[in-house]
Amino acid sequence: MTQLMGRPILGVPSELGTRSALADLLTGVRTALLTLAAVAVPVLGLWVIAPFGDDSAADAARVASALWLLGHGAPLTRGEAEAPLTMAPLLLTACSAVLLCRAGRRIGRRGRLHWRAPLALCAGYLLVAAGAVAQCAVPEAGLRARPLPDLAAVAVLAGLSVGYGVRSAGGRPGVVGGPGAVGGPGAAGSGRAGGAPRALDRLPAWARPPGAFPVAARAGLAWLLGAAAVGGTVLTVAVVLGQAGRSAHGLGSDPAAYLGMLLASAILLPNAVVWAAAYALGPGFTVGTGTVAAPLGTHLAAVPDFPLLALVAPDGGPDWRLLACALPFAAGVVPALLLGRAGVAPAVAATADDWPVDRNGAPHVVWTADGERADGGGREPEAAGWGAAGTAVAVLLAAVVAGVGAGVVAWAAGGTLGAGRMAELGPVAWQVAAATAAWFAVVAAPVALAARWWAMRSRTASWRDRLGRWTVRRTAPVRVALHRLLARASEVRSPLARWRERRAAVDIDGEPDPLDG
Image 1: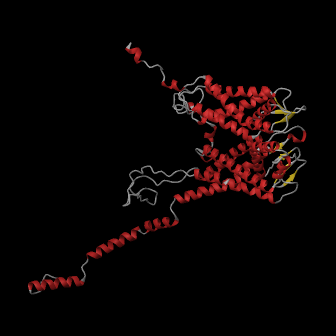
Image 2 (image 1 turned 90 degrees about the vertical axis):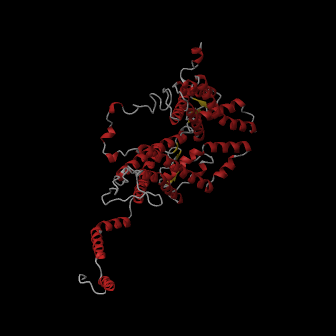
Image 3 (image 1 turned 180 degrees about the horizontal axis):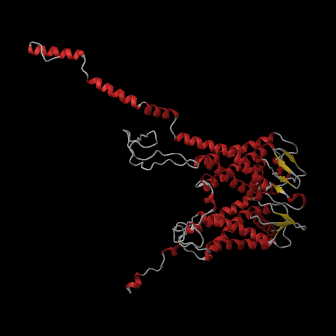
């Protein structure tokens, strides 16, 4: 009986951190309903204050569901002609991705992580998506869904977002015990099995700087954030100097229509920022088939009456808007400084604990001409790092990362609003990717090399210190000989001293000493 009472109820303590698959399923449902509510509440509010009674609450709910699906990149059709609609509002996409990442991060922080947890979360999210697809698939829906492509688009966004959230929390599906457990990311033997050679190991050392990919990824992300700031600046100037306000005032015949136009402009605002960034980078964007809006020239046809499209520059060649191309120079400074400083290795001495100290307690180390410590503590640390060639390789790698990221964002910001001329809207992905990589390489390469040179210069001795060390080293024999000469000269008695000694001897004895001098 004592043994039975002393036995623990659970054999493994990490089992306390597990949750049932039903709880994870409900978490996915709740996450989907939160994002759907963010769309449905404004749409239903506009339906309530709208003066027209033709549409019912079911129609408003279908519009909300269609917008929610469109925010996940799901393709829709509109009208009896089934014109395609693929312009995804990136604001809704960002909200959905953030909430899914947070849910995946909560799963990844558990003490025990199983592969069914993120799978159940995505399944719950897809249940709500299936209901939205079923609601928009009826013939009377203004925006009709396509079941298989729509569910596939929602599944891709949910899987990527949840996977990123789980990974950022340090967990991996299928690993019991999370990070550091047996078989986990921190376990022994998680490196290369058997020491299999990689293709990168055959490259020279300057072509594969250590730890360059994480730094290049952060630099590429910094460039994308800078490009977003550039796009926001260009868009703000276009709003101040453009016709967006008058266009919105003309379209808003009543409060409901005016608020609906503001809502549509708000959810498409990130798309407009990406379009403006593409304009500043040079390739520009299209507003229909056969059109282009770029700093070097704008060629447009009839543009739909929409406030954001009213900001597009009129037809013509280069004008003052060409100044927008100078903004990417400012966007490339921060990632270039990041790469330049990362290319310098930290200076750490091997035996810094036993350095002698001065009267103020500060380390006091004397280095010889050959870079050796005078007290025998090792060589002087050198700021080697990646080297100039390695820094250039890291810049090119960051340019590729930034180009791929910009191309993906440009592809997501574009789409179609119908058949015919409205089949092409937004920036061309490959042109934006190539322009981003070129801008990054041109701007960041010289700035990164200059930042690395300055960091190494600040860590090495100045020319005055080097000149002083050379002078002390070269004049050491002369100074030693002079010191010995002065020491010997100080031992020789002067004639005055000898005379005084003779006088003292005469005063004592009364007569001079015959042995004295």
